Length: 433
Image (tube, rainbow, N blue to C red; front, top):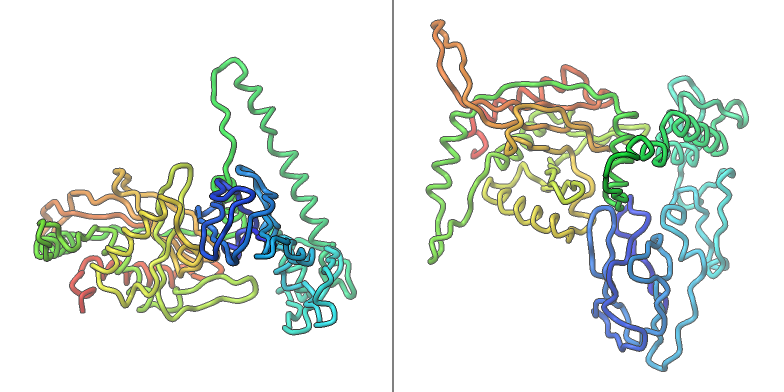
């Protein structure tokens, strides 16, 4: 049987094999770990699904292969390798999983599917109808998908199809033009290195994670109309409640407390409840529509060596603070070990980025698409404030900045969400009800 590079998420197109646990000639059983792969998000061990002998390794350690590619061959119990699968199954998922692919009939099941990127194709089982821009221009499904992948603004594309319809070849041409413009505007690596020819430096190649972060955040800044709202929250009551809760936490026989709440745990819970109070902001941008969610799934930015990842706390509005604390720490530990599974870091309603522990007072964060918001959290500080009688006193405050996608969240809606969050932070007992 063929061993394929597995699909580890909708946005993952390739994986790098970092280790082989079996050698050619070794016997394998179902469940035996065959190899380890690294994507832009995680590292994962891939087990065998059938018994036999490892007859061939086609992708060596350190090499990168697209999703669906054949990386090895396992012979069955008789010692003969299985008949290779149809080429269509070794096509990268980015192509074979596209909505524009024509699903084979039973008679065609063994034949490969050939796709022409300039030809519009519709899947018979699902209705991917054309969309219409605000200008009235019709966009075919394949063109819409290609534009989303390339970060092309369809409003700037001229259609060459019937009645001015925008088709795939129009997006392809716009993509080529955009790449050429970027190439002309941006100096090459060699040109930049030449500027420092007289100075010592280390040339650090980009790994999958850093390359993906660079691409996604560049697209986010260029395609998402960001605006920011900032507020100072009084956290005197929150700090007192946190201290009391941690002091009252039960301990095991070694004296280790059952939980230890952090300020970030309260932030996650408060944002989750705020999204329930302002449901219109609990949403994501989805090309030609907005998705509004019933539950608050909160992503938590975790810094890694060379990048970051955002594991998601699902249904955070329903969980206790101690449960959020335990889940956050467990996910963060596995994130740093690059052991997260795709469903643990994909999706989510919004995200929290906290730099307070580094002494940062306030900052703005880039929205992680398709999210419509992101909360940047600064450090807790003692600050002077004016009292009602004109005096001055020092209180503990925390500055938070809500980044919003103006396509989904307007100014008033963003302000309502931030106000709901601030109210929960300043009256934290409401999180316990």
